[in-house]
Length: 199
Image (cartoon, rainbow, N blue to C red; front, side, top):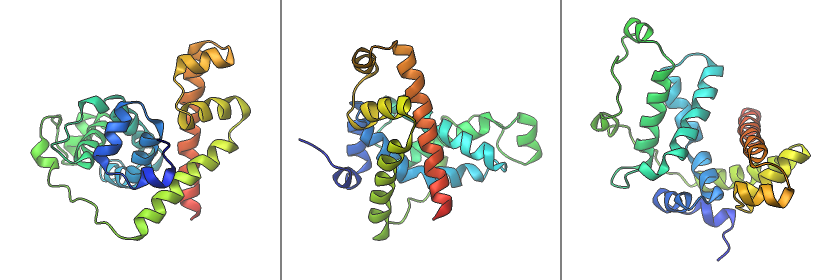
């Protein structure tokens, strides 16, 4: 059954994670757009430099998505994601700086009870419209990429082709495919952030 952007944005986190486990790129995009602002805000509590916040936000999503099989559905997805974001932020802060700023100096990987206190975002009717607009922006921004990146981004993010399939279809090395997709995603995330600032 074909899924459209609007249907994807109506799915619960659990359903999206289930799709993401099957490497459905659309599910990753919706989870990213759903939580990007929250993760960035959460990281901003610990990291002051705006450039660092952006880098750590991207790194947090990369870590979460690469480890998504370890997500335990007994907990909220947002709790799990914010825990990864917080750990990633702490990785960027030296122990001395943490002590100076009275931040915890131990790893919080196992301190799940602490993070369960994070309030869930309150839903409001405008959120669904915003999510759909963000998904549409992703699709529009893919079309703005340079040819080499646009082609692999379309095949990977829209058509759900794997690295090997793309490499064979385009007759290029698989490592080239991986590099182009990684760079295309980084450019897309940057474009999303710029368009957010213009709103």
